[in-house]
Image (cartoon, rainbow, N blue to C red):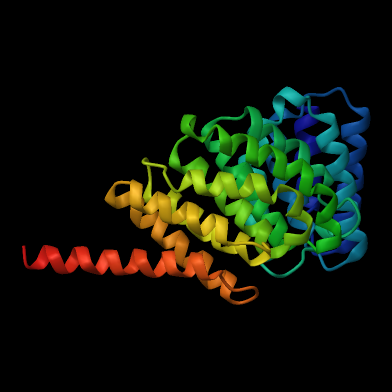
Length: 299
C-alpha cells in the first residue's frame, strides 16, 4: 500500500497545471527509483506515459526533470523486464509532438538515450507485437528529434533493424512492414548518418520485393528502395537487378519489382540520371509488357 500511495500521488502531481508540481513529481519519482526497494512494477506503464508525455512540455525545467526521472527509472528496471514497456512507450511517443515537429525532451543531448534499452529489448527479444512497436518507435523518434540529437543512436538502432529484417521469413507481415517503415524514415530524414548501411539496406529492400506473404511488405520495400536511391551515386546495377527480378518472377511479385523500378528511375533522374544501357533495358521491359497485353487481347 505504501508504494501504491506514493506512486499514485506523484503520478497525479505530474499532471498538475503548475510547473513546480510537475517538476517536483518527476524529481521525487526519480528519488523513489534510486532509493526504494518497494515493488513498483504495476505502475511502470503509467510512469512511462507520464514522463515521456512531459518531454514535450514547453517549460525547460519540466521536460529536463522528466528526462532525468525517465533515465533513472529505465536504469532501475531489470533488463529482462523491459519488453512489456515497448508498446506503451511507442504509443506515447506517437502521441507526443508530431512528425516534423521536434520534441524538446528528445532533442537535447542524449535525449533519446533512455528509450534505447526498451526499444532494443522489444526489437531483439520481444514478441511479434513488441518487435513491431519497437520498429515504429524508432521511426517516430527520428521524425520528432533534431538531427544532431538522433545521430548518436543511428548505429544502435539501424544494426538491430537490419538483423531482424534479414530474418524476416520468421516474422509476420506487420513486423516486416514496421521495420521497412522505420528504415525508410531514417533514409528520408537523416540519410547521411545511415550511409554506412547503404549496401545492406539495398540488399534488404530488394530481397523484400520477393516477399510472397504480403503486398504491403513489397510496396514498403519498393518505396524504401526509391528513397535510398536518392542518395546513391550509381543506380544502373540496381536497375539491372530489378529488371531481372521483374522478368523472372510470378505476376504479383513482378509487379512489385516494376513498382520499385519506377521509384528508382524517378529518384535517380533528379540527381544523376541513368546510363544508356540501363535506359534501353527499361524501355525494352515496357515494350515487352505492352506487347504481351496486345497479343493477349487478340489471341
